Length: 420
Image 1 (tube, rainbow, N blue to C red):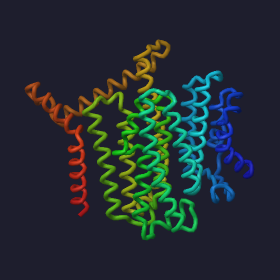
Image 2: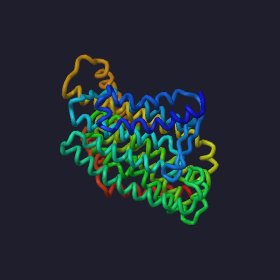
Image 3: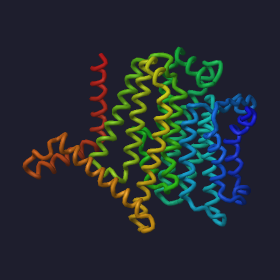
Image 4: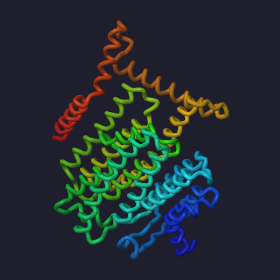
């Protein structure tokens, strides 16, 4: 394909959803949500790598499609197509037209953040994506949706303030705001540790990583099925992608900061495992899976910050990992929401989906039972009362804040002793 046509298509991926977000336009078109995703789907299947520079837009931003961004773009396209397929739009409903506008604004921000080549472009499109997603969270208008929207909005404002401060610091230090130039400049800057923590905390808030996962729990419990399907591919995946692109990975070794990040990642994984085996694992499986996934990724980021050579060698695995995270979390969200809808309103036209959900529930219960049998020698306990006491202790162990803080401190001391 001609390079000029390829560049026009690259720009059209972001511009087309923004145009369709106008109510006067998408209300006159059939299936506007599907039509908005079509340019991105075409761009995914086309071979080759093309970069487009736009010096007149956002102080000189640009778009690029290469082997790394194509992974994330394919995941985003699949998730957005699935979210569009499970909704039933109505042209006569004003509330549905308003939801379509927020849907398309969030889509444009998501695609723009995936294709952006610099910090300003990523920040602007991610901000558009975040506030558009806030509109999707509160579309039902009930009390649970408003509570989830308030929590997400607070987290979003704090995260954007931190990232904007990091953006100003990078603009003052680096000559160019492209991802490669910022990573190289901030690695040797005197304020590199401050920049590192602002970026990491900002994107951890956006991704709902532990311990900032409370908004994710409320959002998943109250969001409609189409919005819950987008939680893994939009805020969580874009938070992980932003951390990879903004952090100075593979350039400089951060000793103490990297060790603290590794400890936080392992603490998040341990927290998710404890909550999985001490609480009901089916309804909140999406939340515990998201916490565990982000914990593993944060541990990998800490390892890359501690050993630049390791990150330079295995950096290519980060993009398939983010892609797999978005797809798996979307499948979990769909299965759980479908199970809840079948429980409230039985639908006998889809028995296979219900059977798969029941099979997943039995598999989780069987896995929990085997874990208890092997690790704690469940069968060797003679009295049933001792079993009940052990279960109460385990439930209390994962409940209070004092226990969580104590567990986090013990993990930190253990990692410090092992590192020394």
